[in-house]
Image 1 (cartoon, rainbow, N blue to C red):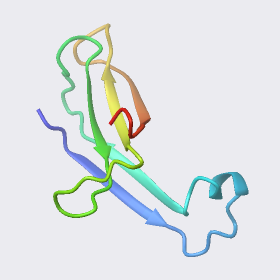
Image 2: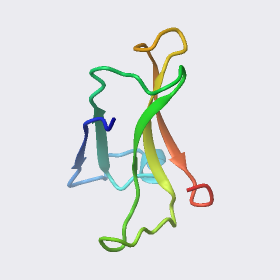
Image 3: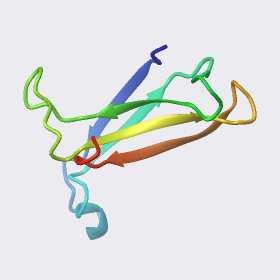
Length: 96
């Protein structure tokens, strides 16, 4: 039951125009995640499907120093194919 997921990563050549509140947390890259939910049934009502991005130091070695950034689509409790919401979540290393 894997959903098709795509990541578009784009960056700025010059970040000097970004506000200081943005540059404190960003290096100028913008990530856009899309997930195909043609027929969304994640199990029980309130279930979810999602994807996480984690840094790997090599092909098989995961570096969980910063945890993970995840995107989750949550199934509504009102019907089996209804979307309740989409959430962007940072999961801390201690939880990951």
